Length: 406
Image (cartoon, rainbow, N blue to C red; front, top):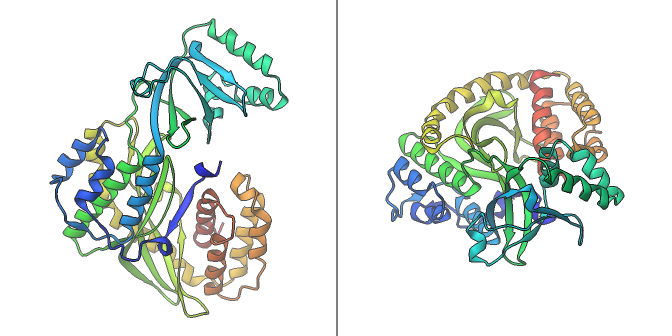
C-alpha cells in the first residue's frame, strides 16, 4: 500500500522561509505523549518559550509529522487468541472481537474490528503463533481457508495466548491496520514525534554550547519509521576531491528493539564536471557510527541519561575522516565500480533485486577519475523508482567498495 511506503523529504521540498521552529510550537507535537513531562524536565523548558531553534528544514518536517499524526491513531490492543478470527472479505484480515481491553474503543463505541495487516504485520502474527508464518502464507495463497481456520480453532483449545497488537486507526475512512506485535511485558512508546522533538532540542542546546551549526539535509519516514539527516558545519578537506562533512543521523523505528538512535556519518562533498557541488552520503557498519541508542525496553530515566553519550559524535567523525581519506588515493576507479556491480548482482535484498538491471546500467560507464566515480554513485542514489531501503543498502556497499575495497 502506497500510503505506508517509506517517503523522502529533501531540501527542494522545504518551505521557502523555513529557518527553523520555535520551541513552544515544537512541543505541540508531543502534548499527548506520556513522556511530555520527561522532556520538559530533562531540557528544563518553559513551555511558552518562543526561542527559535535555528535548524533549517525543521518546520517543514514538523508539518509532515503533524499531518501523519492527524491521519492515524496508534492503538495497542491486548487480545487473547480466543477473541481472534480470520476475515477474508476483500483480502486477508485479522478480526478482533473483544476490543474493550483498551479504553480507546469505549470512546469510539467499537466492540470488534477487522484489521488489514501491513508491513510485516501478517508475518509477525503467524511467526509468533508457533512459527507457522510460511505454512499460513501458503494456505492463504492456495485458498485453503478451511485448513487455516481449523488450525486457529485447535490452537484456541490450548493454553491462553495473549499478545499486544499495534493497530493503526485511519481516521479518514475508519479503517484499521495491524502494524506489528509488540512486547506484552515492557514497551515504552518512543515514537517518531518524540524522536523529532528530542533531536531538535538536543541539537539546539549543542549549538548554544559550541560553534557547530546544524541543518536538516533530508529525511526518510513512514507512519512508524523516521530517519533524519542533519548535516553539520564540521568539515575537513579531502585532498584533491573536496571536503568531508559530518552528518548526524537520528533514526527511530517504533516497532524494532532499538527505538531511537543517534549516529555520525560523513558525506563526501565534491565538485562535478558541471562545476556544481554534490554530496555523496556513505555509511560503514553501524557499530562504527553509533553515538547513542535508546531501546523500547528502556525506561525514561535511563533513556534520557543515554542522551549524554552525544559527546562521542566528534570522535566518531574524526575516526571516519581517517578512514575515508583513502578515497583520495584511488588509482583504478574501474575496480571500485566492479566491486559495486558484483555486490548488486549478488544481492538477495528485495529492494535491490527489483531495481537490479537499472542499477547495473548506471554503472556501465567509462570512469576515468575519482570525481566521475563519485558522480556515478550519486546517480545510483537518484535512480527513478529506487526505494528508501535500496538507497540505505547502497550507502553501505559503496562505503565498503570505496574504503574497505571489498
